[in-house]
Image 1 (cartoon, rainbow, N blue to C red):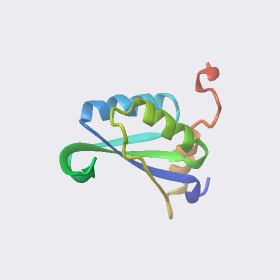
Image 2 (tube, helix red, strand yellow):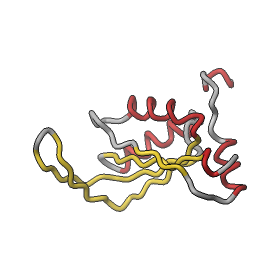
Image 3 (tube, rainbow, N blue to C red):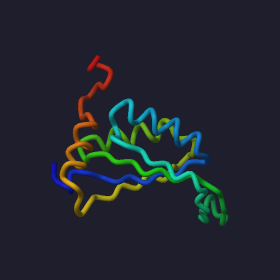
Length: 117
């Protein structure tokens, strides 16, 4: 796998517990190889429905592949409590080849993850 086949996805959650719950689901369904949850609060300032808002959130960093990104995005939207969740995917410029292979090996592009048994 090349570095440009891997993605780093940023997602914020209302709290660490929800981030852990969603992270476990995405990893168990092989849509992400790893989810890092930054438990120190992230102070977010944003415009929502015409008003400037502020919230304390938890940031999660998901490692995945381009091959499963669309499924990861759809599943993350379904599991996320926000109406419009932050889901931002960035391509990698470089990475340790062994790590990138591990990411690829732990993300499954099969249409039905449950069919694996």
